[in-house]
Length: 355
Image (tube, rainbow, N blue to C red; front, side, top):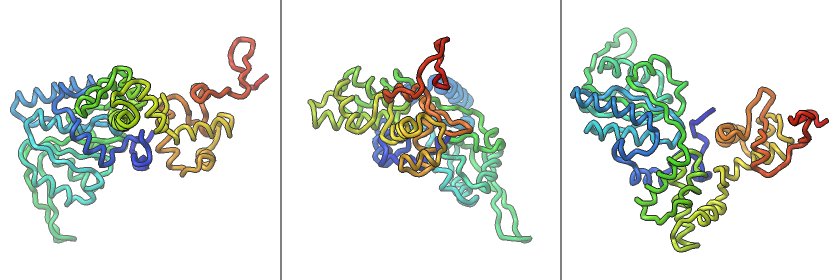
C-alpha cells in the first residue's frame, strides 16, 4: 500500500492527506509545543519521552529518531517537539531536496552542537547522500571529496553531535544500513474516533470556533483517522456554519456541510465512491483489472491505485486479488446495493453460484 501522496493533491481532494500551503499555515498555528499537549500515539509518546528525558539527564544529544507512517499523522510535529524538549534549534529539509552528497555536506557542516535536523521523506534521498549520512550519523564525521579521478582526495570533516529525525511514509524503502543507525524507531498509527474528537475540540478552541460534542464526533468520523484531514474538514464546516447558520457547529450542521463537499459518513469522497460504484454496478463486484476499472471511472490508472485504493482497502471495502479488484460485502452495504446472486444455501451461507 502506497502512502506516498505524490498524486494526492489536496487542492482536488478535501480528504487528501498531503498538505498544501493553507494546511501548512494552519498547522503551524495549531501545532502542539510539547509531548504533554500532543494528542494520540500513546506508545510513541511514552517511549519518546523516556528517550528524551534520559538524554537530558546525561547532558547528551538525543539518539537519532526515525518516524514512519502515513502523511498527516504528526511526524513533523513530533520532530519540532523533540527539538523543543531538548532546548535545541531545528533545521528542516527533505529527501528530494538532497540530490547530491555535496548538498548534504553543506547542511551537516553548518549544524550547531545539539541541533535537530529533520529530514522529511528520507527514503527519497539520493544514494550518494545516503552513504554520506551513514558516517555522519555514526561517527559525526563526513569525508569531503576534493578533485576528480586519480588525484581526488578525501578531506575528513568533523561534525558537532546532532540529532537526526527522519520521517518516511514508506519505511520499507529505507536500506537496512540506514535504518539500523537510528537509535529509536517509531511507527505512527492511524487515530481512533475518540482521539480525533479531541483533536477537533482542541483545534476549534484555538481557531475560536464554537462546536458541540456531537459536531466534533461527526467531523472525526469522516476524517480517515488523520488529524490533518480532521483540521481541514473543521475549517470547511466552520465556513458553512458561519454562512448558513449561527456559527455553532452541531452534528446536523457538520453533516450538511460535509454533504456539500461530498464527504460521506465514512470519509469517502467523490473519487472513492466512483471507484466503488463502477466496481459494483458495471462489473458486479469484480474481479476486474485495474486498467479497466480506471477507464470506467475516467481516471488515470495511477490515480485509482495510489489515491483511492489505499483507503478503500484499509476500510475493508475493496480487496486486491491476483485476478483483479473485488468489492467486499461491506462495499455493497455502504452503497445500499444488493449483491447479485445473493441467495443463500441451505446452511445459511451465501451461495456463490446463485443456485
